[in-house]
Image: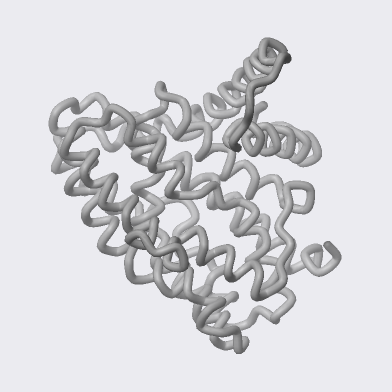
Length: 296
């Protein structure tokens, strides 16, 4: 599956892959058909691999600009906040100041459907990392888990928003770009050959999210949505700033310092995540401008 396929082909591909991911990541039980299940999984993982490699191919040359020592890499990575794909997209200023309530609901539904679960992605990514990066992953994970309080878990806060606003996210009603973002994050985090890519992708989320989520929260506030509904966005507008600093200092810098070659893969992962986001923003903007969103 490549970036040159038609929208309909991309939609069908990413819906199938999203449903596969939902099934394989959920709790299961032993089945007498386990061999058939493995054969099916192998086919889906091959499809996933072709998708990830096609996406990698679009960013490899740009990622090469990160090559150098750890200090240069961190400088390059930090610059993505301003120069990376999709940054300062006009969609978010429009959400903050102009979107109607139905348009905001549609946007939030797409975002909720495309949320892969940061805490789970983090748990997969930290496997077998060196002690210093692993400890930062643990600190970040504990924040995501609300420091042990269920209502403060970030995933639970997102679910509270979905319930309060009576949103109905679902794979079959989500644009393929949003599904592709989630499928990409799951593929990177659950496949150990893409472990460095997952580190880059998670780190760039922390780096670039605050500005966007602050604008979403501002739009929600303008439209009269409650603090409970906005809590997920209000929190990440502040917390992710410190998460990004710690991720660069405790995860990325020591890894690149120990093995400069891994910087290429971390950079690719960051750019892959940003490209997926940029495609989402373009599709959301088109849908909202043409009222495709309100017809869903």
